[in-house]
Image (cartoon, rainbow, N blue to C red; front, top):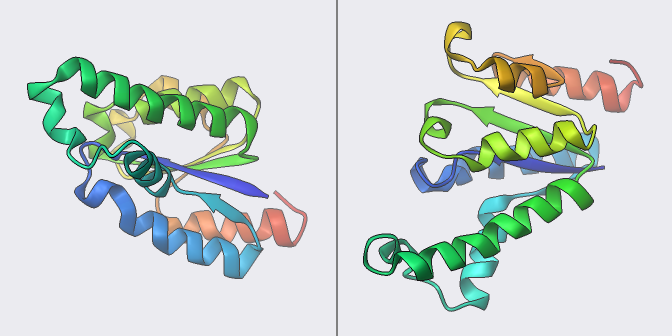
Length: 157
């Protein structure tokens, strides 16, 4: 199984690399699942395009910035639609200023791929759209991991 790790990057500390790295290790060791980390994916695109200073382009070269980000968007869409079997999403305050996580969840829903959402917001602040596109919502990673073990190791839901 291949899982895509969706969540805030642009406005998250260290692009949300920490939780993705920890979860990748757990998924591989406990379930034998492979993860696709968009932080790693975008780093590859940065290197391939010599775009190490792309964040500066947002204000001083906005067209160049948008062209570069478009490469990242297309890559993420391709992964969600054509490579991932399911998504795990960290939904926290950092996703509120961005758009990619919203789109990834919606695409996965349209492709009928499971979306497991770890919601760190109060239930009243969680969008109905996101709720509707999520297969199951968890209050923390511990509960998510228990569910994934039941589902993928024991054949249950």
